[in-house]
Amino acid sequence: MQASNTLWRFRGVTPTAMLAFVYLYLPIVVLVVLSFNANRIATLWTGFSLDWYLKVMDNDNILRATKNSLIIACGATVLATSFATMAALAMAGRRFRGQAFINAMLGLPLLVPEIVTAVASLLFFLALGLDLGLMTVLIAHTVFCIPFAYLPIRARLEGLDPRLAEAAADLYAGPFATFRRVTLPLILPGVLSGAMLAFIVSLDDFVITFFVAGAGATTLPVYIFGLIRMGITPEVNAVSALMLLVSIAFVALSYWMGQRKS
Picture 1 (spheres, rainbow, N blue to C red):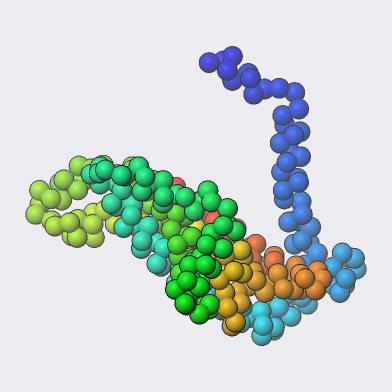
Picture 2: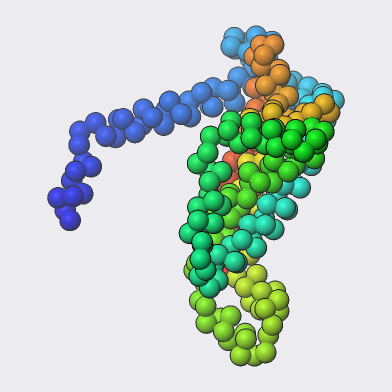
């Protein structure tokens, strides 16, 4: 056992890991710092200022895009978490034929390139004759977010003692009463964790939204992409920094909820 552990202890592993972290996170730190730049030129630091954050809060287009993002993210979170909870309950119950295949299909959106999902969703909506807009974005986000909500819920269910449901049945509790009074309170941290992951995935999504959103359905990531095409400004950095802050907060909350004991 000791020999196998020493296989990973080679010279240079720590500097290599540190270099990888610097490569991943240093550009994010630079972006946040430059969002406080007083200069209009984003890469030329001239002093500290909060003006760009104030301009973001006063920009009607950004506020409209943020409103669209929040509407879609909230709707997709509720729908995806509901479907994921039902799927997790079905998968955690008695084994049935094709269960492994269904389990693999539930996790497939995590493996398929997002561009493939986006193009497939666009073709699907066009084949149905649906007008592209907030509704098509909501449907696409709901389907895409289901695996992110499903995994924490399923993990929580795997840790439940099956004797609890049996004890509830012995006390003449029906399936719905057992779920409402026993199962749901025990898996609630996992449900909330999955919901938070689904929310932040929907809020930050760009590729799928870019393909299936129509006129008037511009979300914040799509709007930021439009701004970047005209050049990087401190205003873009400020919007990106705010989205980063929200993302970190929700991911941290999701992790914390997932670690909570019943």
